[in-house]
Length: 216
Image (tube, rainbow, N blue to C red; front, side, top):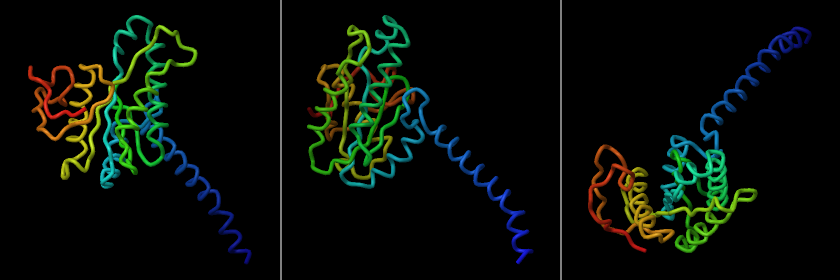
């Protein structure tokens, strides 16, 4: 009995050390998967979770881009721009809920995958557009903007991966931004081919051609 107690006493500190180390590694990994400014998932972490969610036929892919963000940064300073990004991220994450996922792809661009259980994605995103346009508490009232949204139902394009669906959502978002329409759903037309390796709809990524395959 004494021998077993002695062995347990010797092993306990080692086990405790490994437990603490494991918890530390998990915390570090979680931090690495989160955008330091907004707390949303990074592009890599978002991609991992979003890809899993696309197995659900009710999945909807959303791309969001803050309108006039550079102008706001230049006029009111980076602190105002950061506050806008953090508010946008928090509102997006809250609206997506626990069944979906939201991430910051970079700059003022965000993406989300939500599960449309009731077939009301258009209404949900119209509400989200209004929520994202609300003034930020404590912010200068002059710092006001909207967020353009593009979205696509994964079930409309069976076999397409997350990258292709994001491109479709991106084209719809670009059309919404041009038309100041708030939110647009991607239609069933073809995607524009990218140039310079960038997704369609981003600066330097599209030829001079009208947007096609986009439905309101």
